[in-house]
Length: 408
Image (cartoon, rainbow, N blue to C red):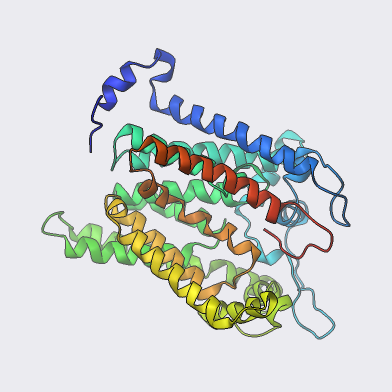
């Protein structure tokens, strides 16, 4: 795929010397996007009304450290409870074990080194990882598309509706960096270097089982195409070993929580506590959460349950169509393997609620498919839609209202 008027090299030559390096262009895109998002967050903070959990018009750092940021702050300061909190009926309540240690450990170490408070360090860590993600993402996309298209894919990542997550005290930025790096190493067949990356990634956000499935699909794909791309026994063994190791990592935090608390189901019970307010306490039944959620939301919105079930099916079908589209097939297959695996993981274990929107962020590699059309109008509309989406996400999810029960 080559641009019609100027090749990437000629276009780069037309730029001022200071802007020619690819990494400078990526960082300029990132910095410009942060100006836009920061302005939106300052607007949202200024419009924040006083509630029992939030001050009126808080400063940026306080605003960027609310919701789950408070859980990460608690973990950074005091770690995880050895005893699970129990409600009046003996059920496990919401607690820190729902949040993995990768991000708060990094934040705590930097707090110790700098003496800076959680808000400063937490936001700084997220912004730093977000900038690094943009650089790695460009290096990933430029392996399969021209410079200008890869750079626009980074633009879409930086202005996406969920991009405020890149500069708040959440683990999403750190996880995005590790995921982008893991996909880059997988595309480059650097399996040994993947070991430390997937280890830390699995301790940052739930990702081990989904990435293990992506590795299985990668193994089958490479075996199927071994006539076109040699797949020597040493690499076969490496992929199998890496896949098994990653699958074990997928259960690592669950086992850790069980060992520390003495309750084997501590992690699952903790996660289920977040949906108890909707459907009560129960066991985790794979894929049942979305059915239960459709029934609950149908009652909440007073619509027929079948309508939401049909909508769920249509969304799944639309996602499959996107993965099978011509633009997606121009991406490295590993990006589609990951996206399909993570989407299946979400369907298997999560309950649809307000935070589900945030959980879609690891699907960001698909911006590579959205970036490919060259129409200027299309690109302007896509960027504008992303910025509007940021405003809506901040307004509907991030701002805290009185009796707010919809954590982002």
